[in-house]
Length: 265
Image 1 (cartoon, rainbow, N blue to C red):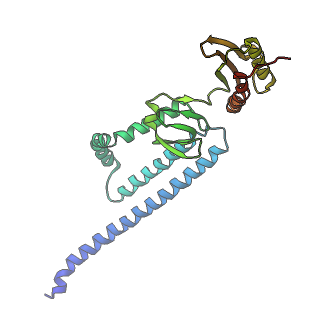
Image 2: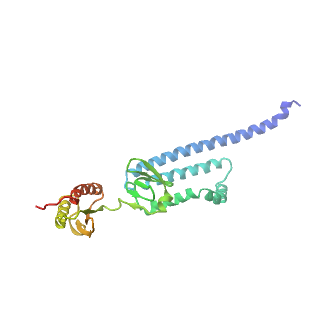
Image 3: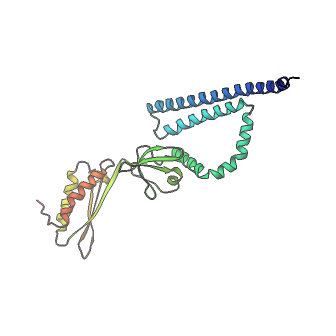
């Protein structure tokens, strides 16, 4: 028998296997490619649609990510199915490996859990200025599944792990519409206290950005007498957007009161 004829059965078997699995491989790659394309298209469409609605901007990136990965998981399972791997087998393997994966990625899982809690309880939203532990401070740009993206006052972008934010106290400076400006200063002895108080009242009453009525009316008072001077306290409510400018203006106008004799007309 010719040597080629002896190898022909093995060649035919190999060719049959190659054709069968080759087609399955091509179909699996095609399913993955189409699934990835559909997932990106759905995520982008969802972002654009939610941007035109009244849905909180905080939820938009997370919903888009969840939709994208849900489609990709379906595509992966369908691609593996072309090789005879059933979805039930995949779930069994994932369940068996779940403990090991959880231990290896416990930090990542903590960030995901913290991100979900931040989205559900919403201690802050996109656009709020927050301050946390250490150097964590800035305007919230995005709350993701793993990190929260902030822009600091100097324009630098900071990515903070969600678990770090969730596990520590957070100050939200944008939660309320109004904020109170509180200024404590000391004037030298020899100045007439009543004149200083009258000048403080004049400064607050002439500023239209300061709330003038009800319990939120400006407060000026003497808080203490010391060997070096008289201590004064000023409190004034204003909108959160004007807080910084009102505080800066009051500090600038109050400075002369600490040394010069005030004359009230």
